[in-house]
Image (cartoon, rainbow, N blue to C red; front, side, top):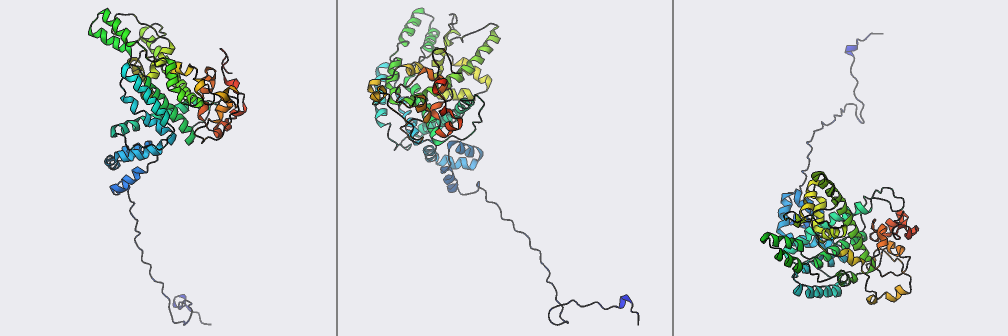
Length: 448
């Protein structure tokens, strides 16, 4: 057998289908460049598309964030500012609240002297009473400046609503434990809270009186004559409407649970002012080196008169009279600015919201008077019922008709805003299975 050297071996042909003489070659793959499409930027779209996007913003906070971040969208917004604002306000404000929003416009134009103001105030309230049930309201007839004012004020309402929830939902009403309340509010909860804030603001606009102590200070600056000071004090201290008048004129327009919503807002604002005022008094004590239980009224800073203290009720009423815009500015300010604002705006103002709430309602005018006298049943229907109470109101009144619109012993309930929340949230707390009397103040005994 012959030995064949390896280098002379013939390479074998590759096996293919068909003839052995056919050689199959694989085509050479040509590498193609990958084409990456360019992303379209919302900044580069036509201004008409930008304006369409702005018209569809879900709320005012989103609109403000977009036009603050994008110069091109800001320009698109400015060219259709009023129509965009109208669309978003109508979308962002609950229909049941929109009437109270628009109702704030006319009282701002009323004259402030007694002879002209009170008759026109009563005429406005009568018109408000007759048209309050209408929902077909629009923002189009408003002047641009007024629409802008409402926009800014509604942003304040949104911010204060968040702070109200931080206050009211911080503690579980049954267990007393801390709550993780950072959940979205339902449309019905927003409706109740927003309308309470707007009605509080409407009360301050309607019944705010000039600070007669500031007028007294002006008189002292003009001339240090004691006679002119006495005349100024006597003239400006005339009270045209007392607490009962304000209660009958305004609070009696609403159902009892709606007034209780305003009372919840009042208690919340007073609580926040008390927190800030305690800090103010502590800092005042550190600066003066002595204990100060009360702040000095503003007219004493530039006069020879000694500092006159005022009690908590006067203090509360003064700051309540400054309205929601001032309150919003205060809670959003830095600590140093808060103390400066409190010092600059201290004074006495008899708004009497607290006393108006404490006045007895005109029962004889209430269509539910007979049902209340007979203690008829009143149950909870559903949260979307715009004319009915929430489940906590009927629970607190023992499922009986209640027309008294403020009870001081329910302070423990108002602390967590009991009339604001939907039944779903109340059921999560199991509060409706509790005895409501355990949360009410009896005499001087607070709830446990």
